[in-house]
Length: 225
Image (tube, rainbow, N blue to C red; front, side, top):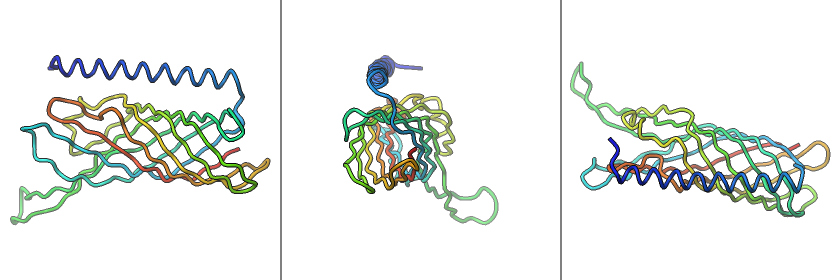
């Protein structure tokens, strides 16, 4: 049963999401009205993520969680603003979560302590809106990305936290950062490598007993055309 505090927290979260959606829509409409996309691209790679479990007083003892490696795939378009500045909306699929190693005694057989791994995987549809700064160059062009992000949970495969499935937030929001290097020019397009970092302003779980926050590093390669 939801308490007044939990209800108020969810109301504040919903209000923030509405504001962020309005900002997203305004920026996209403005970019579409003033410019046409100069490039489209795809990038794929690995997501290395972790979760911080913060129990309130009286909750279970905190445990150390290990990072989890998953997949990341993204499609994007680029709308120029100035020769070095552009707006880059994206649509991405990212696997996040963490791992937990536990010790247990088997129910049958000789007494012995076994170590097992619990895999907490959560899949998201991620919508970042990046401001892209690209340094000029004939062949090699470094760039940086910065912008807000919305995450929509599309799948939950948490092994150690299945009891929390009903409390996992469906929508999260946060910030995305990235550094990359493009190589190539002309009609054949360009290849690039990119290092990204995503962290949340909202909580994956936000209850009276437990708060869960997450962050991810992305290692990507891609192609623009």
